[in-house]
Amino acid sequence: MGIKDRLSHITFKMTNFFKKDYEKLLAALNNKKIKTKITYVYILCVLVPTVVTNAIIIGNIIRLSSNEQKENITNISESVAHDISKSLESAVYVTVDLYASNSICNFLDKKYKTQADYYQAYRKVFDNYVFYASSKHLISYITFYSNNPTMINGGKYYRTDTIADMEWYSKFLESNSDLFVYAYYYDSSYINHRSRMISVIRKLNFLGLKDVEKIVKLDLNYDQINEAINSSAFDTTVYVCHDDKIIFTNDVNDKSSKQDFQDVSVINQKKVQAHKTFLSYGVSWDIYVTGYKSNYKEVLHKNLLSIGLLLLADALIPAFMLMLFSNSITKRILLLGRYLEKVKGETFEQITGNEGRDEIGELLENYNLMTLRMKDLIEYELKSKLEQQELILARQQAELLALYSQINPHFIFNVLESIRMHSILKEEDETSRMIESLAKLMRKSAEWGTDYITLQQEIGFMKDYLELQKYRYGEAFCYKIKIGEEFNSYKIPSLVLVTFVENSCVHGLNRAGHYGTIFISAYVKDDYFFLEIEDTGIGMQEDKVQSLEKQLNEASIDELQKTDALGMLNACIRLKKFCGERTKIIIESEPQAGTCIIIKIPIEDMNK
Image 1: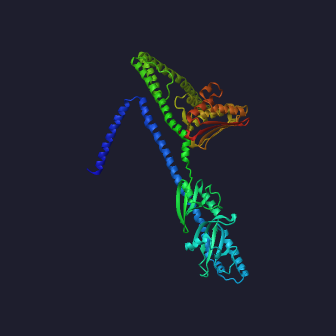
Image 2: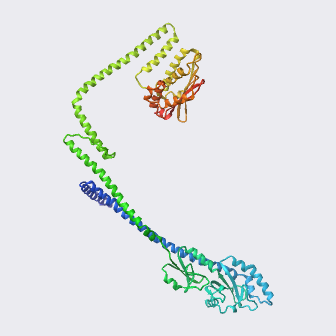
């Protein structure tokens, strides 16, 4: 047996196993009442998922907040380390410029004969270079030192014998390094001159005389660096330490930079949330971050009541709704059961009251229909023979009436045909044509058949009617038809055009001495088919036009008994029936100038 066959065999066994378990479970549920089933649904599908989902969501919120806290603290320590490194880097870049400056080295190496020579050289060097360099960086002061005995102490320069007892100078010499960064407290005898200092000290031994000791000390702007660290700390407290001193901090207890550095033992009393050590230009710095407040615990504590109420609502609202659904179902099923028991005793009672419109409501309604039909069937068995006899009699009477209704029109048609033939024999051609046209119109109006004809057929009936009118009024009356052959296959209700043309002749052109002209045209525009019947008759006032147009567009069977415009109203009802409710009648008229009736039908409805 191959792997594929084994997999198929295992799949078949598992399917059978689950199918058997499913059938057992279904059989067990079929023995439970509906309320018990709904309780199971509530516990398994509402209560348990709600509790588990809310627990997972709250757990994820706590976990994400904790991760966010760690990330934010790490970003703060990284930002502070960047601020310190950048400040030191700015100072070191200046020392590099000074280290490679030929004019600075020459100034420090030169042996001056007089004080005037020294001051002249001093002004030239420091006016053109040093002030410019210090103004471009985070440097508060630049000082040069050398052991050149011909130079004078003051301003930007001092001899090294004046700083022999200085702490920073001793530390610099002990470091035996060309570049040295040192933080210290400058304790001057003058109170206003006491301050915390951080300096970058460098030997200027790249150029010039090697036997002349030359150094430069750049004092960084302590307050500006501390302010940058404070900006990076956000809502935390940051301590930047070197050795056993706190060099920078935004601690509110560290009140002034005029006081000596605090000892690192202060940090032992704090809860340190992050610690970072980094090396910058030979100096090891330690950054401690404390006081970061994660608000998720506070938010959870403040909203504990709201969370509890939401959990309670999540549990109670579904329980209430499921109870309603359960009662809605079981109450009506039990009601139906009671009435079905009565049916067993051949009592067919109707279920009264409004029992809803859902599936169970439809079931109750069908029960009522069933009982009514059962009663009707019982009565039908007793009356069926009598009704059958009555139906046979009624059918015979209808056939007699139909035959009678067809006798009269055919009799009239035969008489007209006899008169027409008599006119032909007497060579009265015009009279015979008019009688033929009249016969066609009468035959169409009395014909039993479809009421839906082609436009070509309708135009034929309309020409017959117009020829009769021309025969009546003579040359004073004329008509013009402009309808293309492409519209011949369009279908409309029969005698619609004839009805509107008749209205134009009777109400528009019936004037003594002049009967005018009727124009009939058809065209397509903007997906609509238009039929226009225009006359040069007496026209109508605007209020009558609006009233008639409204009446025709809102035509109904009830209105047929209330209006004089019976023919046109009938035509409009049939148009809407056959061509759709979007069919519109538009009337344009001007007194003593004429009237134009426009029939507007959607093309898609014409083609249905």
